[in-house]
Length: 196
Image 1 (cartoon, rainbow, N blue to C red):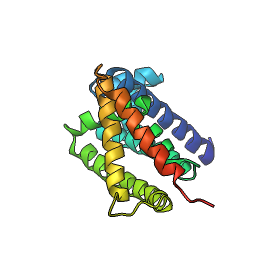
Image 2 (image 1 turned 30 degrees about the vertical axis):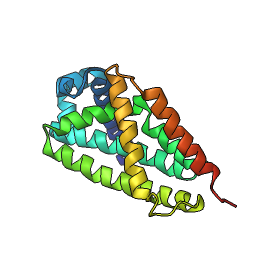
Image 3 (image 1 turned 60 degrees about the vertical axis):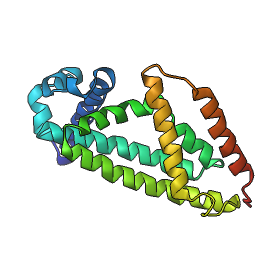
């Protein structure tokens, strides 16, 4: 087998392992992930999980980084959108996308390496949000003293996280009013933009 064929086969196997890990985490939670379960789900021998990823922490890190890469790609796309605040809100309140994040947050309580990775990623995400929000606020005539991009980033992310978290456990009290309020503010800010 040629080197490029071996590399392609290795990549295909690694993706199958990551896909299986993600499915188990989404369906049953991070605690259900084991090399045996992952291999079974991917249709592979369990030794291949350790061969490709070493320890389970390495597998979790690889999955987190893949999800992060996909997340950042969506951020780059929404930064170019006509209504970036609206798109950011929609992405932040996407319950399907948050399910895996919840599992990683729970896992971070038990694995310091995951906690550090989430912290690094959150700081990077916040930087991307601020870079996107600052010009939107400026174009809308909102001064940093009224509302800075970093404060708006925290408020939007925090509200979205709270809504998604509560909804996941069946609590929806005041959600529709909160969503209407936030979306109304977003609409006002985006309508006030002086974009050429």
